[in-house]
View 1 (cartoon, helix red, strand yellow):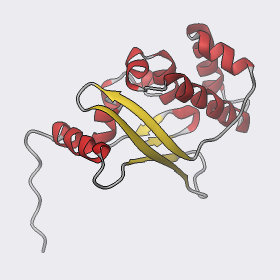
View 2 (view 1 turned 90 degrees about the vertical axis):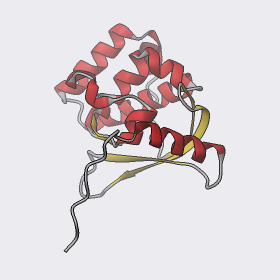
View 3 (view 1 turned 90 degrees about the horizontal axis):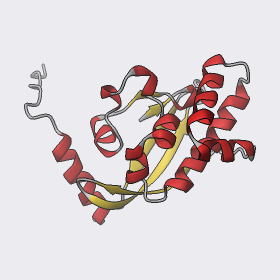
View 4 (view 1 turned 120 degrees about the vertical axis):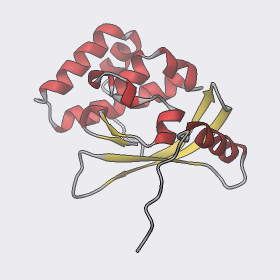
Length: 166
């Protein structure tokens, strides 16, 4: 999954959409990771440690907003989250800033059950406004099997034919 400024979801592969939410099915305004985590009931159900993950999103959003305090879209997002999420208001008022670049997220997925996935975030020096999120599991783990199951569930019913190579 690729996030841009203000945690806007710029791209997500099929497996990321099956794991989290089908970003493409959401209205453009709703394709925002912070908005989804803080306001979406499905995020609260999916993330086993929702409060830890949601606080991390707020702290990272504060870091992002601090890079360009005059970003009108960021101010609108902060205002909207402040009106709609009491947790956001509390955590935003603490003024904590932190960027998490790796760790583990625990999920309770409606299809594959409980799983813990490691994540890494990669921001390229040439484009600091885009961050690639990579989720992975240990080989042979229950989480790897869960991802394989989820990937097969999310696979298209009729895959596109592969063009012959010359």
